[in-house]
Length: 298
Image 1: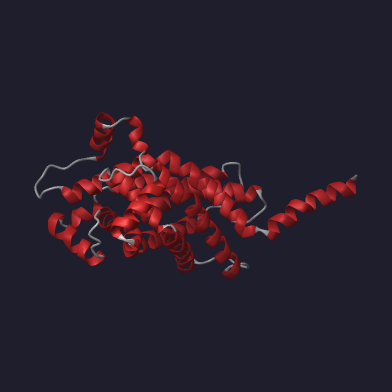
Image 2: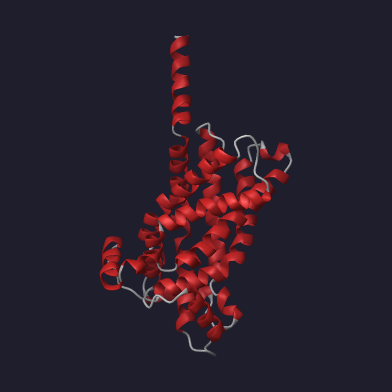
C-alpha cells in the first residue's frame, strides 16, 4: 500500500518535470482568459479614445473615458463594451501562454541557479513578450479593428479573410514595430519592477497566506510604471492598425505630433493603464499560484 502511494506521488512529479514549458503555457493561458474577460471594456474604451483622437479636428472638445463608456452603452448596448472580446481571447489565451512558457524556458535556461538582476529581468521579460507579440500580431490587428467601431466584421475568421483579400498579408502585420516598441519594453519594465519589488519584501511577508495579495500589489505598482512608459507606442500602434493606408511608424509619429502635439501620445492612457496594470497583476498572480500548485517554480 505504501509502495503504491509512493509510486502515485512520483507520477505527477515526473510529469511536471517532463513538461515544464507546457505546464507554464497552460497556467499562462488560464490566467490570460480570466484577465481578458474582466478587463476587455477598458481596452475597448482605450481604442475608441485613440480612434476619436485620430479623427478629431484640432481645437475640438476633449472626450473623456467615462463619456466614451456612456456613449457606447447609449448608442449600442451594455454588452458592446465587450466588442472585440472574441479576437482578444483568440489573441490572449495562446498569446499569454506563449509569453509565460517562453519566459519560463528562458529563465530555466539562463537563470537556473540564481535570480536575474534588474537589467537581466528587463531582457528576460522583453524577449518573452517579443516572441508572443510576433506570433499573435495578426490577431492583435483584428482585435484593434473590432474595438475601433470603424469596421463591421462578423467574425475573427471573416475579418482575417477580408483583410487578407482586400489589403494583403502585410496588413495583418501592420504596426509590428510599434507593437514591439510597446510590448517588449512594457514586459521588460514590468518584470524588472515586479521581481525587484518582491525581492525587497521581507521573507515573512512573502511566505504567508497573503502571498496572492502581495503578488497582486507588486504587480499593480509595476504595471502603472510600465504602462505610462509605453503609452506613446500604444497610440502609434492603434493609429497604424486602424487605418488601411499602412503608414509607417515614423509617419504615424509625425501625424499625431503635428495634429495633437505631445499630449496626443497619451490619449487613452487612463483606461489603458487601468487595464494593463490590473490585467498583468491578475495574470501574474494566477500564473504563480497555479505554478506553485503544480510544483513548479515560476
